[in-house]
Length: 300
Image 1 (cartoon, rainbow, N blue to C red):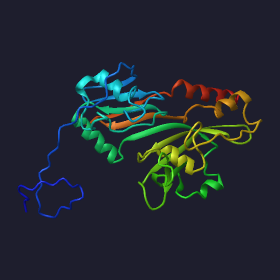
Image 2 (spheres, helix red, strand yellow):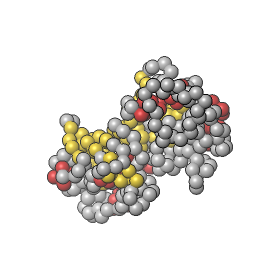
Image 3 (cartoon, rainbow, N blue to C red):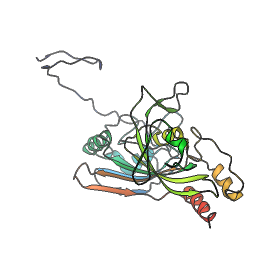
Image 4 (cartoon, rainbow, N blue to C red):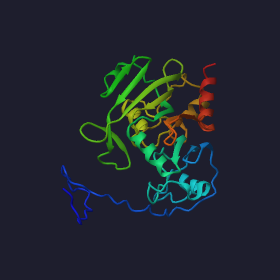
C-alpha cells in the first residue's frame, strides 16, 4: 500500500506492513561554530576521517557555557568545509566523544560515507576502545566486598566485568547512575595493571575496555564498584590515605589530582571506505604520567 501525497512528520507514527514511504532528508544545517586556530595533535588523517589526541580540558563540541575553544572549532579551522554535515548544527563530523577532562584518541568523520560507516560500528559495539585510569583501591576478585556488588563478575586473566544499565540520576540530572529497570545496557571490563600503597592498596592503574559506550560509563561503573577514579569531581571524593602507605608528597599528588584520571589510550575500527582494520594509540598526558612516575618511585 502506498500513501501517495501524504506527508508525515510525527516520529511516533506507526508504520504497517506493505506501506511504502519515501524519506526526504533535509540538507545539513550550517554550523554556528566558528573556526579557531587551535593546535591539534593529529594521530592520523586521510580524505575520509581524522584521528586526534584530544587534550584535557578541551570540550568536544560547543554547548552552553563552552561555545568556543572546542575540538569542533579547531577542526573547522583545520579541515575547512570537508567535515561531514550529518552531525547537525553543533557537531559536524562527531560520531563519538570523550569527556572534557578526559584525554586521548578520538575519530572524526570528514566524509558522509565515513560518518555513516563509523556510526554503524559504534552502534554495533564493534569499535575497540581501551582506557587507562587511576582508581581508588584495587578492584580484585579476591575482595569479598566486590564479589557482593550487583553486576560484578569475573573472567579469566584477572578481568573484572562490570555490567549495569546507566541512566540519568533521579535527582541530579548532571550525573549518571547505575539503575535496574531503566537506562541503557552497559558493560565495562577492567584489568589491574599496577597497584600502589604499602600494606594496603591506595590506588591502582587499571585498563578499562568498553563493550558499550554510554555517557560517563567508566566513571559510573567504577564508582558503582566502589573504586571511583582519582580526581573525579562528580563521582569521586578524596579518601584518607594512611601515613605509611605513601610518601606525603605523593599522597598529596593523589589527593589533589585536578581532574578524573582517565585517558583514552587506544581506538580500533574498520576504515569505512577501504575496509582496512586500523588501530591507534596515544600516550597519557604529562599530568597523568607525572602522577604515575611518582607512584612508581614510591615503591623503590
